Length: 351
Image 1 (cartoon, rainbow, N blue to C red):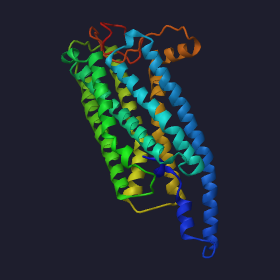
Image 2 (cartoon, rainbow, N blue to C red):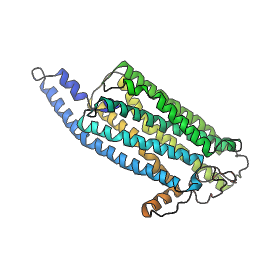
Image 3 (cartoon, rainbow, N blue to C red):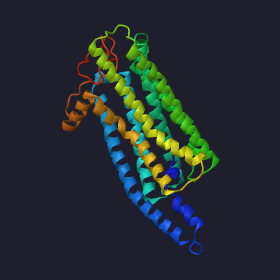
Image 4 (tube, rainbow, N blue to C red):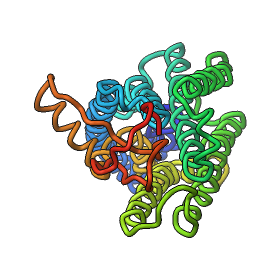
């Protein structure tokens, strides 16, 4: 994605093909409707992005504070949750406000240099977010399917090392954006770059997540995890874990699928600047940007401990946070409920 891909250019195309001397009445009326449409979008979309920015900024910031405020939450899953929140914060701070401005005035006013910085930050944060989800799925897979053997390397130190490698790799691979990205309407190289983003920023990570979670859910639903009881409560916890996994994966897929489909149509399909196409493209961009603020809301709705911790953070700066258990603990005797106070088996602060 970039700013040039989401600005309104339909009326510009019309203006280039229709001047005052040869423009028909129908064309003039259409241009008037398009300009009115741009005026409405110039207000509605920035306001929508503003809400996304506020919710995402404070939501992800609260997630970071809640986790860091409790040493018992320093485990691999929560470290990855912090990393996801950091990536989403980078996206919100460096991308959302400037895209909103480009919608409000229908041009990119920040110059060529910042256009490169903007696109670099957008790429880095988007890839960091999606591949953090991949790391979380790998961590979940190891914790459930290889619960015993993975204890040796599922620790804080290795989590930080993997996260560092992830950021270094993503930042290095996106360096070319700083050299050759510019504000353009369309080139074959732009189309190729979106094809790469679709393949490596959506299809590959989502396929990996689905494969890993598929095997994880098969273990949770049909096979007993070694050393864990198959009580009624254990089955209820399995259903909760299954529900959480399905929600996270489905929300990621739903938020990003529309914008990828629209970009593929725009850059590889027949050209279209109809008002309907532009409207759907704008809505798809809003859905994609919404993904940066939705994870804290999922934690609040689906995790009782996160919900309590958010409430305490808002009500008292001196609150004592309870840990959020999202993983299997070393000495657990059952599959823990996500965010459930009843699952308090702890050992060495690890899951």
